[in-house]
Image (tube, rainbow, N blue to C red; front, side, top):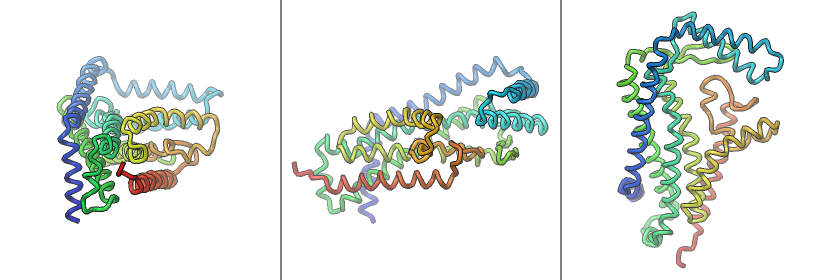
Length: 317
């Protein structure tokens, strides 16, 4: 167990000794701070507007849209949801969370895509880099199994992702609090579940958003790790993973719009678990247990391919 812990420590040292790792960390901090400043300066244009009047106007427009006969059922449900949420805010004097501390942190969860990109780079070079640099033989002569070496590399990549998520949360919290104030920290989160608007703890909601957003991060990093183990090419692993990360969701949406029911079994139809947090589903007929099952199957498949490829690889040549 001690040897395995040292393996993980050694892999972490490899990651954080690279200048690129600190460049990625600094870039994430700068992007969050820059986005906070831009959002804060744009706030001056709308800070004098009456939010109640805005919500009432929005509900009137939505009611008019519901009267149109050509509104699809999916958008019809979304419009009803928005009307109910707006009316609940008006009835209970709960202002929207935009341009508040929690609103900024919620929007900052979109930067998990940037963390996913960084983790893909780290995970893809973790195995393929050993072959490219010619250090794989020195690594395999240790008195530990290949499985433990592979697992240590994977866990080190995952720990890097967790560290980046922590940096994102702390930076967005501090930047949001300093620029938007901490006075709105008690505002509840409103969720629309089974046709009813309910209040939930905002901090727990934010933690849930970060947790669910990291699911896609985990799956894409695992995929990049698999490609790296199979083909020993970090560039192929990085390129293919980034392409699927951006194109996979769009392709899944297009296939769903074309009416293909089997699309719900694809990986990218199940990575956006934040829909379930708001009481809806990515596609009709899908549930949270279903998505977790599909993700688990893909995860086990990726890990199995990585393990078989790495353990059967001939490194004598």
